[in-house]
Every structure is written in C-alpha cells, then in structure tokens.
Image 1 (cartoon, rainbow, N blue to C red):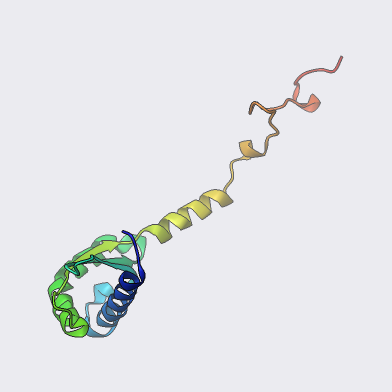
Image 2 (cartoon, one colour; image 1 turned 135 degrees about the vertical axis):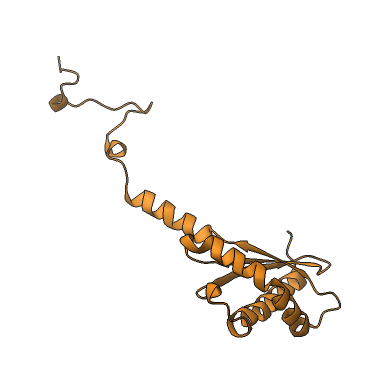
Length: 136
C-alpha cells in the first residue's frame, strides 16, 4: 500500500493505541510476550491489519487468543481512536523474525562444498594432492 504522510500518521496512532490496549486492557495469558510489529489502516479506515510477533511454537495459541479478544479490543479501540468508523480488525502473525533467524542459521552453517575452489564455469578445480590433473 502506498504511504504518504497522513497514512503514516494514522498507522502510527493506531499502532500506539492498539499496543496500549493489548498491553494494559487485555488480560489473556496466551497474549503474554506478544509484540505488535506493525499496523496498516486502509484508506477509508474500515480495516485495520495488525501484525503480531511471538514464539514459533505459540502461533496457534496466540491466533486463537486474538480471535477471542477481537470484539473487546475493537470496542476499546473505537473509544481510544474516536474515528467516525471503527475499523474491522485483522490480526496476522508476523513471521519475519523467524525467517531472519532461519537465514542467519543457514549462513552460519555453510556447507564445506562452498569452500572448494572453482573455475570460471563453476566446476571444482582439481589440485595435485587430490589425484587430479598431473602436470606435464
């Protein structure tokens, strides 16, 4: 979605209000250690998409807890935002941190075949000690 100054301001305000509601107003233990990573509000303010991050093994529990709390959160958000329209809430699990961790782990565990010297076509260069080409 294209961002301008007004939409960034609306997203920031909605993120702050929603974060306060999730932190102080909702007392579901399944929502402990859940981080609100981003919020996107539609242009007409009818839909608010909230991205939340949590541990990989808690995705289903957190999704279920957010669905249970959606009505109360929406009601509290309506009072906090004081917009003409109360946006419909859509919660989505943000997996970018898990993907970044997976990529970092893959980069740490480089396979030994990548360290083999290769020619310009990508084929391994044989050395004398490996039983490769003999010098003439």
